[in-house]
Image (tube, rainbow, N blue to C red):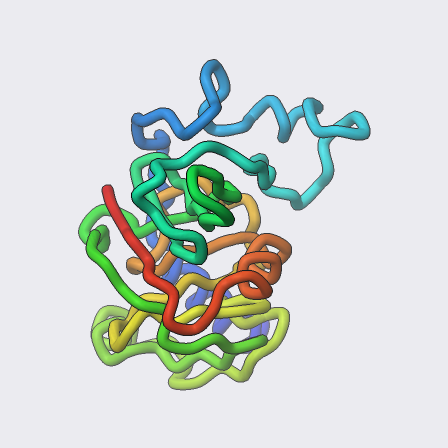
Length: 201
C-alpha cells in the first residue's frame, strides 16, 4: 500500500468512523414501505436497472410544513433527509449522511459561505483523535469534502459532497451533513449565503 493510499485511507476512516449497521427509525415525507430507498438502488430507478455508484436517495419534490420559508434548508437527521424549501409547502428532498453516535447535534444555523471544490484542514479536535491525518488537503475529487461545501455559521459543520455515495443514508460523519456530489452541486446552485438551516434529530 502506498503512502498516498494510506493517507486517503486514514482520511476516510476519520470522516466515516464506524458505519452504523441499522438506519435510524423514522419515516421521511411521502415514503411508506421503502423508507430508505433500497428499491431504487436495486432496480426501481427510472430507465430500468440500478446505476452503479448512485445513492438510492433520489431527489424528489415533497410536501413540507408551511412554517418554513422558501430558501430555508431543513435537515432531519433521524430520517437522513435534507429539504430545500422551494415554495410555501413544497421542498426538494435529498438523502444525506449524518453524524455518527457521539457527533450528533441539532439547532439553527446560517449558511455563512459557499465553496466549490473546497480544500480541507482537519480541525484540532479531529487531529487529537487522529494525529496521522494530513494537516491540509487541496480541493479535488479525492478530497473528502467533495465537489461543493456550504459552511454553517462559525461552527465546524458543513453541508458537503462526498465521493462515497454508498454512505448516504448512514450515520457516518463527525457531525457534517454529506451528500452525493451530484446532489450537493444541485443544492449549491439553489441555496443563497445567509439561508437559514434547521437541523433536527
